[in-house]
Length: 235
Image 1 (cartoon, rainbow, N blue to C red):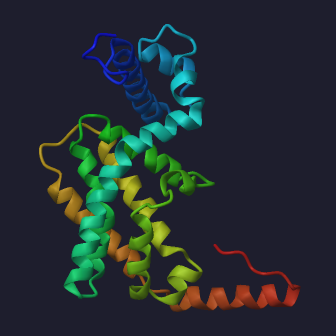
Image 2: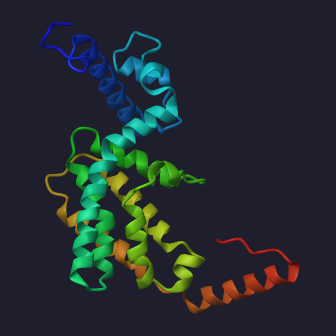
């Protein structure tokens, strides 16, 4: 190390940063293509051009640590965009469900134009949220912009939509499934029409009322749960 170099800028440190970035890029590609659990760590190391068998473990520890690094590469930008939109919504003083749908969709949709793994990120998040047992806690971590979004949306929804049917989470899953499908296809010259229509559809998901039939079935289920002494599970 020369007098002008610091530990953070030394050739060894730069090589370590390059290795870490290469592993993250390889993980983005393979997690998106094969699933988070479908891509082997050896595949990721080979794709990153790493001959050192311990490189991945050194930088990330395990698969969960590598996934965390992939998400942490992209989520701060998504959260920052959403926080701006939520602040604008609060400043407006208007109760506008479409604006809040836009605050969910638009920050994530911006990743369609991110050539540094943004499209892969969208596919990975959609997989995590749309699993039979969704890994919500992996995507929505402490300090996530989803928490204030949930708080602002709740007063605009029917009570059953949040307490029983988890409509906000349904909107999240739908939003990310549509973004992932778009991201998996060829890049388009302009995503604005697609994105605007997705905001329309997410607004509709959030605004969908509980039908008379659904309300009746819910009452029947609750009565059945009372008779058996068991709390009825949510759908």
